[in-house]
Amino acid sequence: MITSSQVSSITNIAAADQKRLVIVGASGMVGGYALRYALEDSAVKSVTSIGRKKLGISHPKLKEVLHQDFADCSALAETLSGQDAAVFCLGTYTGSVPDAELRTITVNYPIEFARVLRSSSPDAAFSFLSGNGADPTGRSRLAFARYKGEAEKALLAEGFPRVYLFRPAYIYPVEPRKEPNFSYRLLRAIYPAFRALFPNQVIRADDLAGAMVDVVVQGAGERQSLVLENRDIRTMVESLHPKRVGN
Image 1 (cartoon, rainbow, N blue to C red):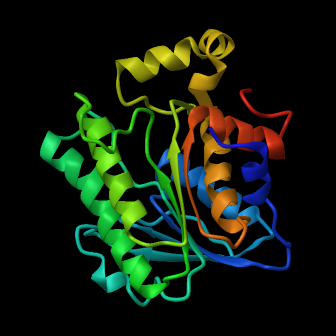
Image 2: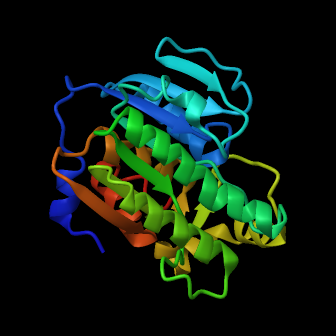
């Protein structure tokens, strides 16, 4: 669990110190909120969105870069040069693709992207959307937990000065969407009761996205690697938006 002093250290920055931010996966739920949050943040100078398809939005801060094959990010070297931070939200749901593809997306893609970012912008901070139960030991019986843990371990070894590994539990979509499976449909239906009974097992998608942006944009300069469980993410959000967390 992160402490109050750690929350303070990663959310304390002069507004004039604007950052150049990269967001991967802005067409997804969390990535989309991260993009909107960053574009409205006065601490962000520019946002480069990297993804497979056009977002269909326009903003003076926004630069869109289309990239189809995240198994090879070498072509992104110039785009990633001179960046201050990255928020990586690209992923997929268990059961939506075959296991081999799930591992490729969950493990290979973030590791390959991080390799090129680290080479192009060695001082950049990295914010990674992992998941509840991520297991870096590889002992979990759940493939998703093993794969997220493998990605976390590799990202920590990459050498970034600051790495933040977000492990949310149930991410509440906020806005209506087509749920990926029955479990998500059920959780959305019972969300008010589930939130009341298990507040530390839920997080709003927009709150999670905002926290992922805040830690890399507003973070202090010292070297830091943090694993942020769902409770920790809620603590961060509450410190910045005390009236919103859990709603």
